[in-house]
Length: 309
View 1: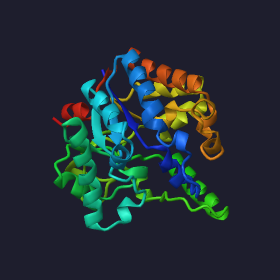
View 2: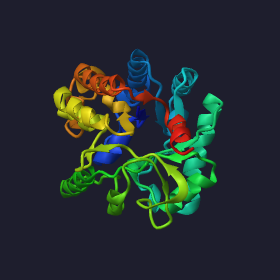
View 3: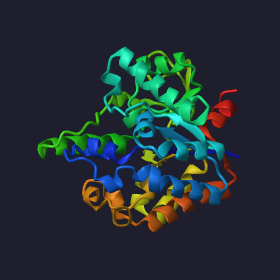
View 4: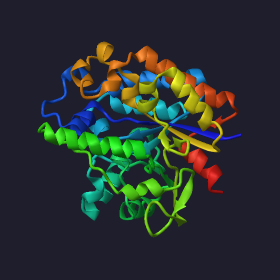
């Protein structure tokens, strides 16, 4: 029997403006679409499947959106884990000064504790970019695990091409490529070594985002919904042979262009062109395939306690 962790990065729409180098402000009706529209859908999706997930929260979203705190509190009361995704979601976090890095971590934790009454025990960096110095600060602040490592060649290649293409179009993406040596990291849970985040040792517990097959194909919401239900189901059948699966979703996976007023963003974010019903059906089939194989669904904090006994 394996472990399935369904995790959700609650990146608001402004984060996608930053990725795509869009200069225009986020349209008012869609500015808080993740908290207003996506989260209730995700909560219903998980409730129907009988699972509890881990939600990675950006602290500023709770400060800037008056409704967000109550939404987050409801998730926590329902048994979902609330984890740290930094205060402002800076893609360049690993390039910032040490004090700024520490403040991004502690500031988000303070806000989460204010709204939920519980201090987070898990961390995920924006854009999957981490280094040992940053994770030392995560460890020093008492975290049980990190879940930022995504050792996926196709993702890294696609991001590199996209950043270059946007530059040629005069768009400045806030995303950064990161250290390619992450592709050498283990695909199963491990403790960090001291020679790099891709090495093993006795350090902080790392629960990497899952990749499948020897080619290390991405097993995340965006790629699964883009490939459609039949292909996604095939990957899920491969993934269910793994002892641990960390299925990473994003709030935007539960939004679409037509129904949520995001048509202007869809030309930059093609997964928005897929209808909400099709995306939800694909993700439901993927999760159900895992559960039907006997996988035990749990939060990342619960998984860390079982894997790293």
